[in-house]
Each structure stands twice: as C-alpha cells, then as structure tokens.
Image (cartoon, helix red, strand yellow):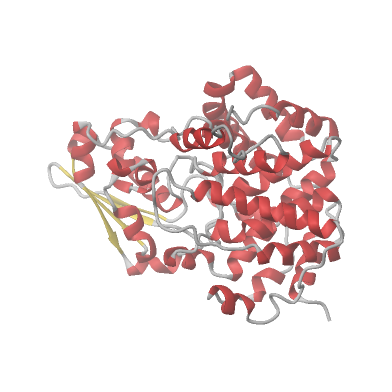
Length: 446
C-alpha cells in the first residue's frame, strides 16, 4: 500500500499535456518582485552580510545554492509577490527562484521540465500548508511559507532533475526532516527572509540527495509525526486531493500593492470610497476584519521599521489618501512624521468582526466605513480584492506592474526582453535558455 508521500509524489510527477499559461504569468510577476527587491533596506543588509571580513568563511559565495538563498530573500522581502490565501503561502517567492537557479545550473534545461517544476512546487507548497491549516497556525508563530519551503523546493528541484515518483517521495521525506516553520518574532533587520532562502536551499539539497540514491522515511506523514515533532496536526486530505483543472496555481492571488495580503481588501475598499470624496472630508475610517488578523494590521507602528509600514492598514490608507504613487513602492520609506500622513493614520481604526470570520481563510475580507464631514457615512464590504482569482490581473496589467517594478532597476529595454522570455519559458526551450542567460549577474549583491 502506498504511503501518503508516495501518493503525493505520484500527483506531483503526473505528466501534463500542456503547461498552464498561468505559470508564465506568475513567473513574470515574481521576476518583477526580484528586481524590485534589489532596492530594499533588507537587501542592503544582505549586501553587508555578503561582504565577508578577511579571514572568515564566506556567508555567501558564487555557488548556485548560495545565489538561490539570496534570490529568495530578495523576492520575499518585497511583499509584492504572489500569495495563496487559504494556505497563507507565497509560493512564487520559493518556486520560481528554485526553478530558475537550477535551470541555469543545468546549462541546457528543457521548457517541459521547467514547467513541471513550477507546477509541482506550487502544488507541494499549497497542499502541505493546507494540510497543516497554514492560515491558522500563522497566528501562533508558524510561518506557513517557511514551513512548506523545503518540501516545495524539493518538489520543484525533483522535476528539473528528472527524478521519478519514488525518488520524489524520498526528496519530500528528506525535506520534511529539514522543516522548521518558526522564524521567531520581528526584528530589524529581520533574518526571516534569509531563513526562508536557507529553508528552500535545504529542499534542493534533499532532491539532490534523493537523486544520488539516498532514501527518506516515506511514512513520515502516515502517522502523527508532525504532531509529535512540531505540535501541528496534519490533515492528509488536501495532500491527496485529485489534481483538477490548472491545479493549485489557479487559486493564487497577485498583489497589486506592497502590503500584507490581510490589508489588501481594506486598501481596495478605501480607494473605492475615496473616488467619491476627498481626504480632507474624511473625519474617521473604521476597518472591520476577521478577528484572526485584526491585531496584525491594526498597529500604527510605522516608525518601527519597513515591515511595520507594510502591515499597518493605517499607514497604507494614509498613503492611498496622500501618496498613492507609493502603494507599490517596495522601499516603503518612513513618512510617518509627515503631518498629513500622521494625522490621517490617527483617524483609522481597525476592529475585529466575528461576522467576517466565515469568509476566512478562503478570502481576507474587510468592511470599510467612512465618516465624512457633513454626516455622511459611506461604507463598502470587500470580500474579493484586486488581484484575487475572481478579480485577477490580466496579462496586460501584470506586464504593466512588472515594468513599474523592473524598469527603474534594469531599464525598460532589458526589462521587456526579460518579460518576453519569461512568458514563453514554459513552452519554448529557446526562451528558457535566453531567460537563464539574461538573469545571470542580476543578484546585485557584489
């Protein structure tokens, strides 16, 4: 009788006649986040870490897995990469750099195996996080993307390395042995981004080990191993659900703003209401959200660091009111002392609403209510925000987002060359080869 990991590996390695067009779009979106990520203060800290003092071993070198860890850290720290809401994971930040790094290291990768790697990585991350209720365990200190990164990276790498279903099961088992999921509390600079990169690196190691003949314990998820070792219950049903349509990637959202996903519906609702009034007329803003994340986005600690500015709804709405051009700026400068920004933040209140809990975690809703001068009280309930599957960004919108992020870094011409190659890389060997050549030297950590 097959084990859970063996059955999952069969699903991940099942052949697909035609790659989903969504793979190319998410590849492009993640490339934009990577380029934008070279500009953040978190990446500046990575540059310092890469400057190894004389006499000490290098923290990062030029080896492919070193570059991989850094690429993941740069992408994920932007908070403008894709996200799957129900699992609360950001799969593109792990899967895309693993696939691109291995494609470059292999020299002559095939588009078919590249596409299989992307699809398998998305499936593995989302399925594993759904199995452990990722959207719920996040609020007890377990970061679902970090938790699922080794297995997701192993699944991606296994496809590019040409591993069969048995070897893929071994890779997943070895990767699970390298799983943590708990990055600790906030700090500045935060190590969480590089921890994610190292977790994915461990997953690639697991695939290489399985390809080299090492066997993993394929029975790990058949019993209560996760409960005993991590204190996390595992529901096997999401792991083994039949593969339908375009797969898990069809339920992944794009981020239109540099913001925690839990804040996106509030930003959307506020911008809709703002179109019918002016910031000067707004006396107060009340944001109601599910209790699970009200505390997370309700803080006003914008002066405490970039991550605080990304998660604070009050700060995001103040930008939307007074500096909307900064909503997708991943640098997220501290404007909390600007009189207009500060005054507007003070007028924003976030409250938990148990009635909205029914939507969560399949959706991250927000009810936005304004009180205007003159007594009017417009409000709106947003359950599906811009970028979600029901309101997805189309190819033109994603290309425009990509250029907003990439053009200031590498120039419009080079960015367009990369975009064209990315959109064809899952179906064309030549486009994948061109993309692999084009991204060499783009880590910008020298």
